[in-house]
Image (cartoon, rainbow, N blue to C red; front, side, top):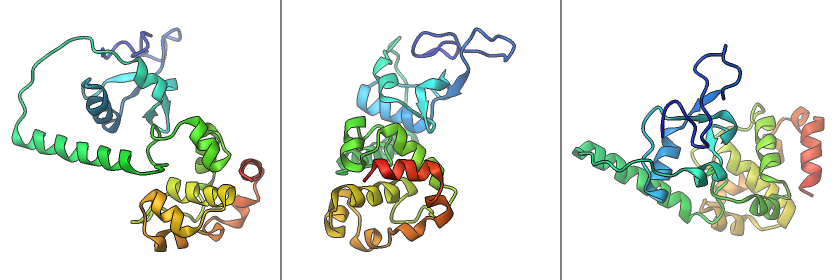
Length: 201
């Protein structure tokens, strides 16, 4: 992948004065490792793409599907490189083995988001962005995205905390702590949040 062209073939803008070219964004190392282990394509550090291929700084699935190798090369790895690759592969494998993983933006399809939460994938991302400035925080047991996803699953599906814990591979204590009071009341009363919550009921 060239640093001057996006994966879609568009030329990237190096200067704001060139309005006809696409505004570039860096591809994260997490996406790079994911593509390497799932597509056997290495994305070099600092590679860029059009900003509209990203959601919350992660590549959309359709963008990943467009990526094709442009060359084949050999590279020597030292022991530290091998250990890093093993660690990254383990994290990716663990995430893929989760029943429902809201933290992996590529892990659930739009239809699966609608089934689990009644929200589209885009609406779910908007909901997370809206309430992330409230009192709810990441914890050692679960992220903000997971907490919101589980809360909406409870509203939508009426699942028990025990079953939710099994599906998300979390301890039941972590599920028990997810309550609507985790989000400030003024956030819940905002028009945007109410619109999204109404969709999930």
